[in-house]
Each structure stands twice: as structure tokens, then as C-alpha cells.
Image (cartoon, rainbow, N blue to C red):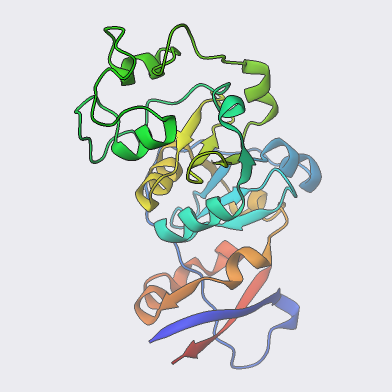
Length: 255
């Protein structure tokens, strides 16, 4: 059986005989506890961060910099779709101002240069040549070192530009809509080409948070209402009800 969430309400509005659940993502990253703060200041301080509930099962949330609300990331595929849906368009010239992180670069690699074919499409390099511009340096080595793999000189990196857009998700409007997440900590961009990439970003960059602190950040109901769950997923994560804090969820079975 498959279920879809219909609505989210406050606990005091709970209807008799309603069934409530929350799906947890089982991941075990290095976690750092977030200290208590007022709702407004905490949401502002954590905007753009990926948060993991240390007192539950590692459920993950993204604090959208645009509205400072928390969005439930669910399973890897859900996280991937969510992060893409919240992305803003960016030109290649502006994207190149942000240093790329040495992460999520693997995959099918026709020329064995350490960059997946998907990444090479995003950069516009030749996926059949290890050294696209013929300068004697591997494409990946140039990119990670901040050099232009398609020509002479360095990339036009701008730390001030990166800092002003930390925590955001960008989509390449001049390529194929490739998605990137700008890590607020090191101001580098992480590739989000596949659901597994979104999962790796959650696992490696997530910041641990207590239930009390998480509940200080306003919940975006829209982020949860489109998620579908199996009966098994519900039963396995029944104990994570407190992940929703003061909210409860109503759902119904769909054919």
C-alpha cells in the first residue's frame, strides 16, 4: 500500500482515530549540537544548513534561505527533488566564481580523469579527453585547484560572491539545469546530479540539532505534502513521531 500526506495541523486540532507518522532517514554522520536560541534568530543563523535530528533517527531538514523555514528532506530521492525544486537559476560565469568541492565527482567516467561524464557536461569539458585544453594538466586537477580546464589561467573565484550565496541551491540555466549546493561552512559548491549525491551531502554536511531547537524553526507544510510512503516505511519509523514537534500529520491510502 502507498500513502500520501493530506495535511499538517497543530496537535490541539488532532482528530479522533487519526493515524500519525513521520518517516526517518537512518544516517550516522558526525553531529554537532545546536544551542537554544529564539525562533527568529535561530532560523536566520541556520538558514541554508542541513539539520539532522540527533534525538530521533537522523531525520533531515533543509532551512531554506529564502523564507527561513525548514523543509523535510525524506529519502534520498525526496531530498534530491526538494533541493532541485528550491534551486535558483545561475549563469555559468557566476557559478564559476564559487570554488567546487572535491566531492560527488565520481560516476561513469569515459576518459578516466576523475570527473564523471555528468560533471564534465556541467563544466563543458570534453568527457573523452583527460586534458580538455591540452595544457598538460588533468581536468579534475585544474578544477579542484581553481584553474580553467577549458583554457588558460585561473577561474574567476570570488569568495565574497560565494559568501553572499552560502546555503543556496543553484541550477545551471546555460547548461542542462545541473544543481549545486553552496556549503555555508566552506563556501564551496557541491554537485547534486543524482539522488545519491543529495544523500551524500546530507550525510557529510548535516548539522545535528535537538528536537527543542528544531521546533523553534517554522515548518514548511508544503515540503511534506507531496511525499509518498509505503506501509513498511510507516511502521519502521513510528517512534519518530516527535520529529514533527508540535505538528501532526493526516494521511490516506491511495490506490
